[in-house]
Length: 152
Image 1 (cartoon, rainbow, N blue to C red):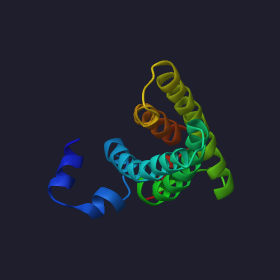
Image 2: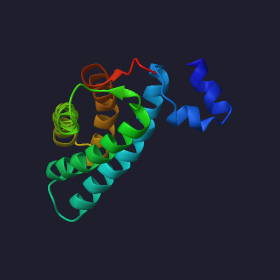
Image 3: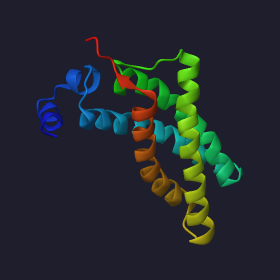
């Protein structure tokens, strides 16, 4: 945590965002940052499609896939750089998407319960599900898909 705070206070954005690191706190910070960008895409698609008349759970699926693509690209560049998988890019994306699909299942379940049963506005349900699923996605992708490149 000290390293993260030091990088932020010293405005060392090169090390904060681009340098390879094994520090899980910095990786999670990057993941949350990248996730924030992907979340804006996800929520934007959900909101716009629902406002256009699409059922909110169907809109959530389209938003998910839009956010997934953004998250995959940015995570490869900023979060899991210096890490490798033992698979080709197509297999890597398939595993990434499968982990995300489990997160989508959690999202849809949480949104359904909070919107249909608890009568929350669908966007509030989405915010809640996003916060919960964020931790699942990060932990699963780090443990299942990526490992730190030992030859630095």
